[in-house]
Image (cartoon, rainbow, N blue to C red; front, top):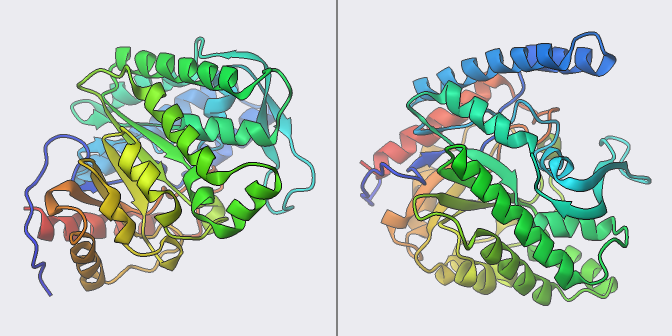
Amino acid sequence: MSSPLVGTIRTSPPFRYEVVGSFLRPPAIKAARSLAAEGTITAAELRQIENTEIAELIQHEKELGLQAVTDGEFRRSWWHLDFFWGVQGTERITLDGTDPGKRAESFRIARPIEFGQHPMVADYLGLQALAGDSLAKMTIPSPALFHFVQDHNESGVYPDQETLYQDIIKVYREAIRAFYEAGCRYLQLDDTTWGSLCSGRHRTYLRSRGTDPDRLAQDYVRLINESIKERPADMTIALHVCRGNFRSTWFAAGGYEPVAEVLFGQARVDAFFLEYDNERAGDFTPLRHIRDQFVVLGLVTTKHGGLESREQILARIEEAAAFVDIEKLCLSTQCGFASTEEGNILSEEEQWAKLRLVKEVAGEVWC
């Protein structure tokens, strides 16, 4: 089967074939982090090992032909918490009563928040230096997720929600400015909040807490839009929606319809990276609310090593093109390969096979 659709290649982000961000941590990284936690090696020694492994990862990304490369999130333990812990005014906490198979960590606001001298700006500079002439993409959790997580760990620092919203907006505006000044022109906001708001079970739970999920969706689109409002014209900002990815698991299921009109119709991001690897994400009908943004279709799963059918991927791209012009579509994996340092349940060889498949299929459609 060949693709009945023909689109053109792109030379600016989002690109026709993409990676979400995280990669499986190599053994050297895992060993070094354990030694650093024990105090056997210094933070400087750990960073040097990370530099070596990130440089090797970037070389693999370039060999694959990725036009935007990432550091694989090799310096992080969590895809989101490391960023939140770096915001001034937050503190690291341990949760009680959680799944014993998962690390029980989160964050809480301890005093009014500020972006400050966030360590991930230095991480981006390191990535950019290693990327050379390739575009270096930075990934951070979204402002909506910052609020959603802290709301479950409320510490009473802020007298009302609007004051908190305004401080989150300020933090993210400063973050975007700092990353831009460091050279970042491609920023991805990762967000599991919308996965929760797509889930009937999670929406019922929110109502039991006195929270209207539809109002929350409106508030969170405003939060995202206000946070990115001052971004420079030559900076691309994408939003990646996920339903959970810890060690190949998931926590939410449900199509995009409950949030589509608000999220797709009102969010001012340049692109949406959308999970579409199985029935948990529903069909493509909600894409009718997309305005003029790009949609990066996450049709290749990162949750297991089995390769999808090339023909099936082509057929699904054709289905999506009934709602979004082919020139506004791109292709990627559904999520990263290691949202946390534990990584998903597949091998490095399978990880790269997935990405080769993404590139090969994209090359048949957009050429």
